[in-house]
Image 1 (cartoon, rainbow, N blue to C red):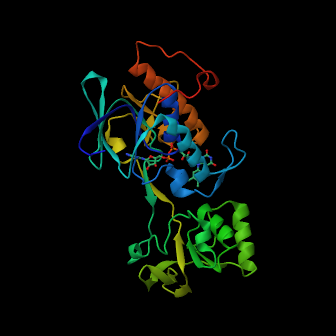
Image 2: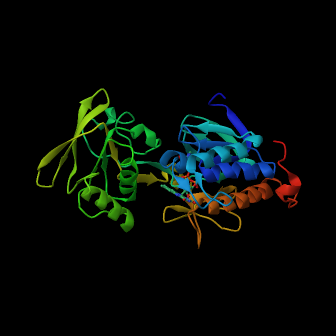
Image 3: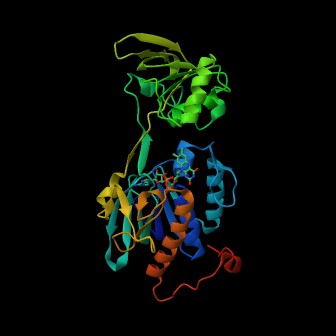
Length: 340
Ligand SMILES: Cc1cc2nc3c(=O)[nH]c(=O)nc-3n(C[C@H](O)[C@H](O)[C@H](O)COP(=O)(O)OP(=O)(O)OC[C@H]3O[C@@H](n4cnc5c(N)ncnc54)[C@H](O)[C@@H]3O)c2cc1C
């Protein structure tokens, strides 16, 4: 659809993470159409961007489901309601219009007018904390990766992992099974990981299967055309070591920021949107919020909690949009999936 033209819908969902996708389904069940906007180029939020191959064990009805598979199923569940996705763009502005409408404007100039907005923006805009290494941009996406989206990419490779948290330790344990060599660079010899995982890593190091490079920090990269050949590391005293490597995985956590959402005049608590849990309403009429972005007493940052919030928000949006026709409560076993 052409940018610059105003598009109309019942609800704009800000964020296409698992909770945003389920919000589309719940809105569809009460016959509300949705447009969905996400900064990322693909749907799935944290599940897709951060841990697609990790199994999740606490989704009701799925004893175990990989995060990527959960997203495929949520997208399929929303599909009958024909949501319009606007990916690769950030919702920047949210402005009230007369008649109880909201105008949503994205970073690509897409303008959508809606009666309600449901913010499912998770942790906001997130990205990796990058180590300050000269020229690292040239290697990113080719031999420097901040997330493991496909473990198999590292089979037979010489992998250097940097960091001391659970992500670094868990991937060292996992990639050790398929990589030709794994080094773990950390500035201290104590890790901030689950004690059991740290003990397993140290046992592998003792057995000579993993190279623990401590206390060192990343110092420089060698290679050309985006392909690493070595990583240099240094102690605080300036002593350096050269580690031959095909791949560097720096795991220094995520930087998260609410971004423009913080400017929309909605009540915030600890950098999250304060909502009334019985309605998912924010402090602005017509703006609801669900999932990791919200807070209220007892909030659990879990996907399943977000799903329940999505059902509540959809019904609140319905009541706002159709005050003259109170929603007749129906189970899905009775209603089926209504036509979009
Ligand atoms: C490693 C890891 C393991 C986890 N394991 C589990 C688990 O086992 N069980 C569990 O329940 N939870 C788990 N979680 C947490 C779970 O992933 C989150 O609770 C869930 O992703 C929240 O979903 P969400 O849709 O609210 O937000 P997100 O998944 O964060 O999605 C929000 C989306 O909004 C987009 N966005 C933000 N701001 C804007 C904007 N202004 N404009 C457009 N788009 C915007 C973002 O790009 C993002 O795609 C795990 C998290 C991690 C990192």
